Image 1 (spheres, rainbow, N blue to C red):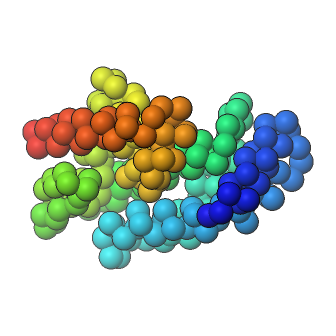
Image 2: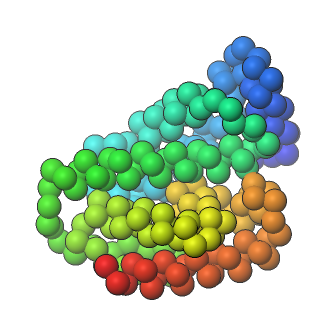
Length: 189
């Protein structure tokens, strides 16, 4: 994404803040490709016969974003941070439904980069990750936000830094601490 698109997204988000009609519709062409990229990454980690497709995930996330009120949009990184949170909620909700229907299955592994965790199935592992993130948020909300933005949103350290208003070094340090914490937490399950 070039800086022109980034500043245009920020401008449209500011118009949305001001209640301008049509701002949400004008935003979609600028953010769709990036949301679709994030959704493809997330869905590549899912089981092959998953009923939710990347396009459906993007559309559902954008619909939820459009229904949000009271958000003071800061910039594109803030937007993508919220989008990653909503994608996480959608995938976890979908996993809970799937897990309730089908128990058991083969052991699979998924990676939170260097963190490898065995789980009874992908839906169960996503639920376990969601529960671990909720526990991490109780201990350190900022670390949980970083994990969520990286894992579910595919944001870079620089984008997370911009979204949270902290240095890139702090993001890297907190990401490392969060990975270790999650590894220990998920290993107990």
